Amino acid sequence: MSHDTTTVNNETHEVVHGHDSDHHAPHRSGLARWIFTTNHKEIGTLYLVFSLIMFLVGGAMALVIRAELFVPGLQLVNPEFFNQMTTMHALVMIFGAVMPAFVGLANWMVPLMIGAPDMALPRMNNWSFWIMPFAFTLLLATLFMPSGAPASGWTLYPPLSLQGGNSLAFVIFAIHLMGISSIMGAINIIATILNMRAPGMTLLRMPLFVWTWLITAFLLIAVMPVLAGAVTMLLTDRFFGTSFFNAAGGGDPVLYQHIFWFFGHPEVYIMILPAFGIISEIIPTFSRKPLFGYVSMVYATASIAFLSFLVWAHHMFTVGMPLGAMLFFMYATMVIAVPTGVKVFNWIATMWRGSMSFETPMLFALGFVVLFTIGGFSGLMLAIVPADFQYHDSYFVVAHFHYVLVTGAIFAIMAGVYYWLPKWTGHMYSETLGKFHFWWSTFWVNVLFFPQHYLGLAGMPRRIPDYAVQFAEFNMISSVGGFMFGFGQLLFAYIVWKCARGGEKATAQVWEGARGLEWTVPSPAPLHTFDTPPLVDDTVEHTDKMYDDPDAVGAK
Image (cartoon, rainbow, N blue to C red):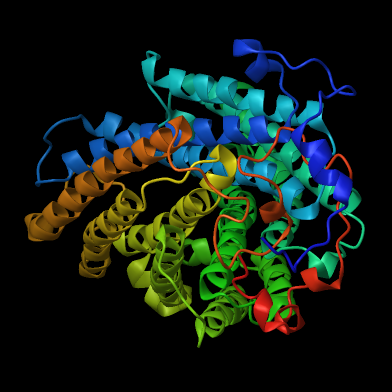
């Protein structure tokens, strides 16, 4: 196999294959191995398994919501429990499924992509993972408390959140723990990328996935403390007699919205920027071409991250802001569409006249590009102030953010798992099952969320357990889509499990068009990679000159 992308020291592979890690702690076995591990691959695996479990838990909550809304009238659960489900579903999916999945992918892939032996801070890495199960145990335990789980939406808006029971304290403590975990993970990723790149791996030679994660990590460090501040003020309002958000004591509930969304909107980009990175790895591989406009992709990512701090109040157009503020936030929101459009254009330009093939990762990447763009366009509609007065708090908003988060973030995570799974396990998964999972998911996810645009435009409010009879048909279609999409994800869990158990052996360069350091090490990737740093030469740059040699493309 010829690898024109990298020049690796001859010693590297000898070190990789047969060495007892003499300078590492003796490797434990059984449960202790997973509890005490400081290895980035094992911690990455822990994050990914945890994320899959939370994805299925959050999905079950979503099915409770859709079952209740199948027909009008109060059917299965009481309204209070319904509100608890909408709140918990969002918290579990955002903080338990999407974010840990991306951190797991970063843990696994960033050291491999930059030629580092491990993460910069391995013990902190272990700690940042093991905080998560405790945080979510606290959060899910609120369901069994006398006052029940929080029922004020994932935003925890006062005064509603302050009127609930004592479970609010547990929720806030859980959010603090998740925040600590995220900040530690982010510090670790930044320290790794800035300090541990292989010789010759300059910043503008890094894979796009590494770039998107570097920028995301800075976003995390910037906004998680803001959320911590907001929920701590809620805590003192509820239990210590302060009046930050209590109008009777001179506070202002709208202040909470400002603080929350100053965290909340960058948070949306924390969940989508790593997805952009994954898609920017997959499309060039299966187009057998280098990524079009690599440098512009880096700048576009940085621009999106910067602009994400200037748009938070587009979630609050209906609170009575001054006209000048509304105009500012409207135009700032629209400006974000420009760097996002640059990305979509570059992906299409990468595929243009490429030698494309449609394996499962590529299908999910294409599904992402098309469906995420729909989510982007409905976001532009919501950015227009007079229109938003009609759409706000309707099901149109629910449709918009689910197109961005399900067919965006979650499809990208699945694309990434299918892309790197052979590298992790050393086995190929069933391509037939993978493709079936893609087509099943894509069909039903649109049956689930597309009708909700129409429901919103017709005036159906979000977060309600019951609705007027004129919305019945579209809700029924949406619920059927929800159940079919939900059960389809069990197939995904089965494919991953089966691949981990065994199957056809994967080569080092799993995919014909794959380029980069991670494809120069054997599959499965050995426990300790790159004990001798690989030397990265000019040919690893993400530009066209890498492919000047026609024999280099698709070389096996």
